[in-house]
Image 1: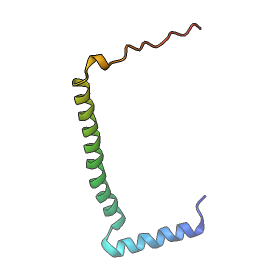
Image 2: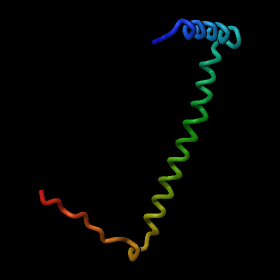
Image 3: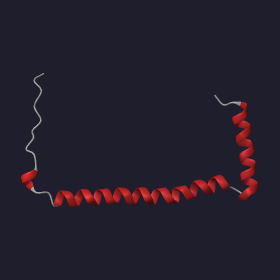
Image 4: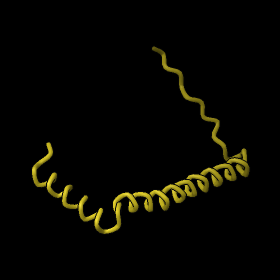
Length: 73
């Protein structure tokens, strides 16, 4: 439920954003996305690269021959 004070605060902030730099909240969100998206992409790429290298260099003598038991139901 939205209270009167939160609506008043949103209207106040929106007016100050417009006077401060036309669209300060929009620019702040855009800047965060421009920083966060490449950072997350780089972390995921690095994790995939490490996983591929680990799989390629894995010695088969250290692999488990585990077979999942079958359920009897």
